[in-house]
Amino acid sequence: MVDNQDGDSLKGSLHREENGEPHSCCGGGYFEIHVKGHLDTNWKDWFEGMEIKLLENGEMVLSGAI
Image 1 (cartoon, rainbow, N blue to C red):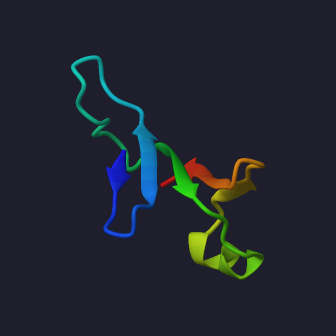
Image 2 (tube, rainbow, N blue to C red; image 1 turned 180 degrees about the vertical axis):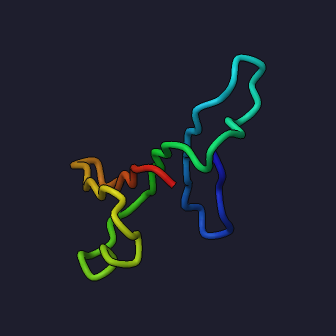
Image 3 (cartoon, helix red, strand yellow; image 1 turned 60 degrees about the vertical axis):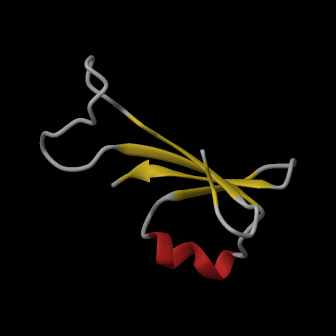
């Protein structure tokens, strides 16, 4: 988890090899990023096909392959 200067936090997960290293073949992987707060629907195109899920606890989850 990363905290920025404003106190917001970001959590992300990346599929990893057995040795803990990120996958290195064939391009990116599947990401799930948790963000404190919600963005409005005007941002949907900017995330280029990633799924945007607004949670009741005030967080937003961005997920998809990169």
